[in-house]
Image 1: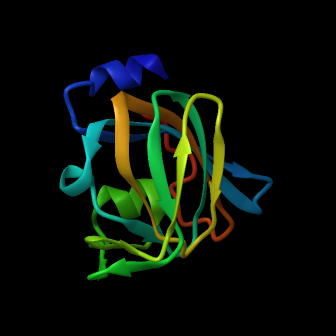
Image 2: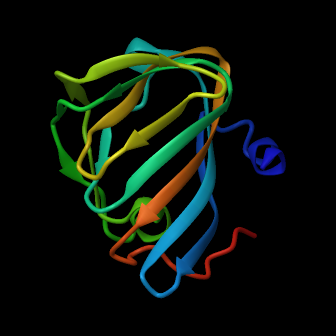
Length: 150
């Protein structure tokens, strides 16, 4: 996992699927790693929600403020051919921010579950970066089972 983070350390945001497996033909599960550089306010990435995927974040290092719930500002569907859709999260909608969400500070050891159709974003990252393991539960089998990062 650390090798993947180091490989993309210069990127402001890196979300990398490590592996996607099918579980007994019933659903897919993806494991990945995300790192986000220190940012706040206007510089923070915009909000997103995923139509069919539940995400579970386990923070490895760093601290930030995660906003969940509410509604996306200026929602727009993410293009179907985007890696966000084809490898990471399935059909998703992005926005310029979130109205009415709940803010919570998270850090090492914290675990957050984000159900489908739940807007979310980091409004602030207060350390040099935040790194978290992400487990994506895919009951509709839309993620590419058998995928392995290169």
